[in-house]
Length: 128
Image 1 (cartoon, rainbow, N blue to C red):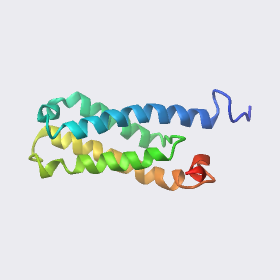
Image 2 (cartoon, one colour):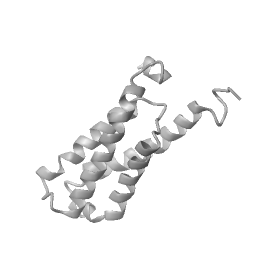
Image 3 (cartoon, rainbow, N blue to C red):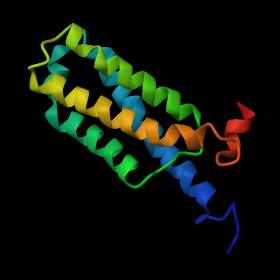
C-alpha cells in the first residue's frame, strides 16, 4: 500500500508522533515556566526522567512530527531549561535532570531541523 493517507502511512505516523510530542512539550513548558516560582518541582525526579527519556527515544528512533512548528517549541523549552542554573544551584539533582532534558531536546532538534525545514521532506514546512 503506497497510500499516503492510510492509518499506517508515514504522514499519519508523523502526525501521531507530533501529537504525543506536543503533549509532552506542553508538560515540559509548563514545568519550566512554573519551576522558578515552585522550586519543589525540581524534586519530581520521575517526571524529569520520563521527559528526558521521551526525547532521548525520539532522537534514537529518529522520530519526526508532521508539524515543523514543534522544532521551535523544542528549542524554546530547551533554552528555558538551560537558564535554570542562573536561578538554582546546578548541583541540585533536579537541575541536573532538567538540563539532561534540555540536552535531549537539543540533540533531537539538531537531527530534526534539516528534515523539518526542508519542504521536500516535510510538506508542512512549505506552508509556514
